[in-house]
Amino acid sequence: MVLVLGGSALDYVLYPDRLEEFFLARLVVAALTGIVLAVLFTPTGRYYVRALTMLWLALPQFMIGAMIALTDGTQSIYFVGLHLALYAVGIILPISLFEGIGFGVLTVLIYLAACALHSKGFDDLGRLAGHSLFILFSAAASAVCTWFNERARLRLFSLQHEVRDKNVTLQKANADLAEVKGQLIQREKMAALGTLSAGLLHEVNNPVNYSLMAINMALMDPAAAQSADLKESLTDAREGMQRVQNIVSDLKTFAYQKPGVDSQRVFLLEKAIQSALRLTSFELKGVKVELSLPQDTHVLGDEPAVIGVLINLLSNAALALAAAGREQPRIDLRGEHRSERLWLTVRDNGTGIAPENISRVLEPFFTTRDVGAGLGLGLSMSYGIIQRHGGLLSVSSELGAWTEFSLDLATPQH
Image (cartoon, rainbow, N blue to C red; front, top):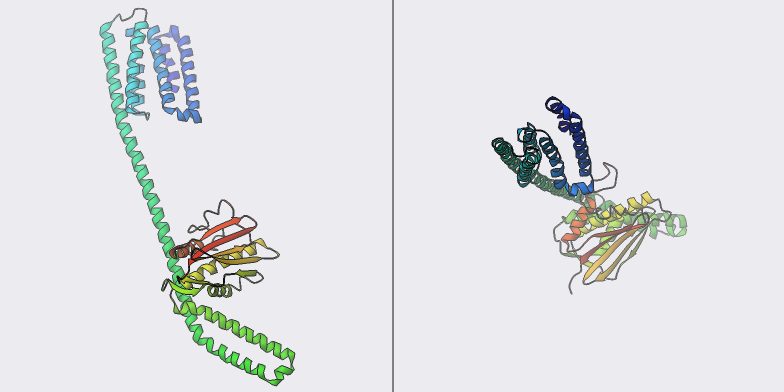
C-alpha cells in the first residue's frame, strides 16, 4: 500500500498532466488492498487466504496495466513496475510454485492487454517483444525463488513437527521417569516402615504382653471386683494395650512381606480394611465409618500393596471431609461379589470433585492441594497397583456432595 501510494512521485515526474487521476487510482487500489487484508483476519478470510492473497497482489498489476494503456503503451516506462511486483512476490511472500507461475503469466497477459488497449496498439513490436520477454524472465526468476522458498518452508515445518514430536516424547519420558521415581520413593518408605515395624515387634510387643498379663491378673483380684472405678480403669487400660497390640500386628504385614512379593497370596480383604482403618485412625477421628462386606472376603493379591491403596483412599476421604466441614462426616465401605471378583467402594460425603478434574484425578502429578502439600502420585500409584491385580480403580463424584472410588480384586477359585 505504501509503495503504491509512493509511486505518485513517479507520476509527478513522468506524467504531471495525469497526476490527479493516477493519484486517485492509487488511492482506490490502496484502499481495496486494505479491505482485502482486513478480510484476511476474519474466519472466512482465513479459509480463503490463498485466493484473497492472490487478489490483493494482482490489484497493483491491473492498476499499472491501466496506466500503461493510458500513457505510452509499448513505450511506457511503467512496465518496470510489473517487474518490481514479480520480484517482491517471488522473494518475500509465502506463495506456492504454481501460484508464482500463475502470477507471472497473469502479469504478461496484463502487459499485452494494456499495450493492445493503447490508442496506437502494438506500434513497436520489437519493444513489445523485448519487454514481454523481460517480464517472462522476471516471472521465471520469481517462480524459481518461490520454489526454493516453498522448499525451505516445508523443511522448516518438517523440522518444527520433528522437534514438537521429540519434545512430546521427552516430556512423556520425563513423566514416566518421575512416576517411577515416585514409586521407588514409595517402596523405600514401605521398606523403612517394614524395618521400623520389625523393631517395634521386638521392642513393643513384649512389654505390651507383660502389661496385658498384669492387667488381667489385676482384674482377677477381689479388690477390682469390689471397686467399680478400679475395674473400669483396668478394663480401659486393657483395651488400650490391645489396641497397641493390634497396631503392631498390622505393621507386621510390612515387616515380614515386601510389597510385590507373593502378589497372588490369598488374604482377607476385611482384615486388610481393618488394618488400614487402624493405621488411619488419627486422620479419621470424628468420622463415622460404615462397613458392609459379604461373608467371604478372601481375595488374591499383594496384601501390603492393597493396604497401601486403602490407606490412600481413606486419607484422601479424611482430607475431603475436613475441607467440607460436615456435621456428620461419613465414609461407607461396601463390598460385593461380581463374576468371581470382589468389588469394593469407598464413598465419603466430603467436598466432591469438580467435573473438569474428575478425568484427571488418577493422572500422575495431578493434585488440587497447595504447593508442597503433595506430589499427586498417591492415586496414580494406587491405580497402577489395582491394574497389576487385573482390576480397575475408578472414581465418580458430585461436586459439593460426595466422592466414590471403586476397585475390584480376584477371588480364589474353589
